[in-house]
Length: 291
Image 1 (cartoon, rainbow, N blue to C red):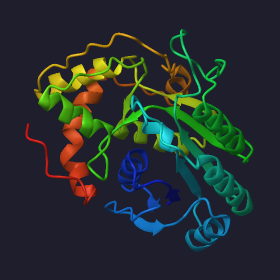
Image 2: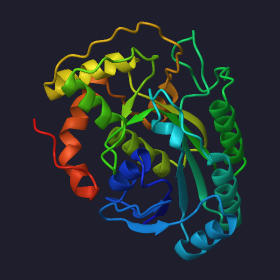
Image 3: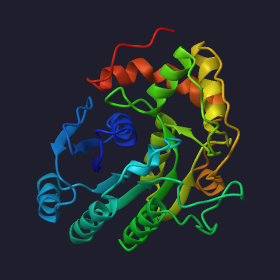
């Protein structure tokens, strides 16, 4: 059985990935704060400290290190939080090389910029924002690790704190808040994404792969799908300005693993279906939302 170390497991992508992979692997959930995920070991480590990272890997001896970048689920949030991902990835990549562990980076789609639609792995990364440049630097470091794997995505899932983007969307729908239209992307549910990650480990994939949903949609479009699925009021938007296009073409991962990708409506249905399971897995998640 593979030993897998998952970082940022106190956030949306890492927590959901740990919950799913723990069914088939030995998983250690690592966070900057306590990361309590059912079925997983736990460690609280400051990933920007190289010595702490080396000590962690010596203690856990992982076969695979999966670093879940904060950008992988930052989605349509208006404000991008500052990140120390570059320092974290530098320390983890260095430790992975020293211990012959496989290094996997789960990163976002912010390296792309419209007006082009459905960016492939070979598409030019034109975004000139600092988060985009930081993400490219992280990708380069991981690809420098033998067998390194980069997964670009846009994950939507339940937060271990109960205060993530998905929860905020549902709260805004309930009170009839005005939605910004938001740029187009290709969101994929956390569980489906985690299953694809498991497949990539089984096949020992390396290089860069896009892992998005089957359809592109705006924040407003995704909120509309949630409203239908959760029987909430339809969203209202006064903003029709689409500032960017970060949609991903994920044909390569589909051909390689022989998988299909979910539509927006299928992702919304998955999120409703798995809510109670995640509430149990994440001790901090609030009581189940009424159907």
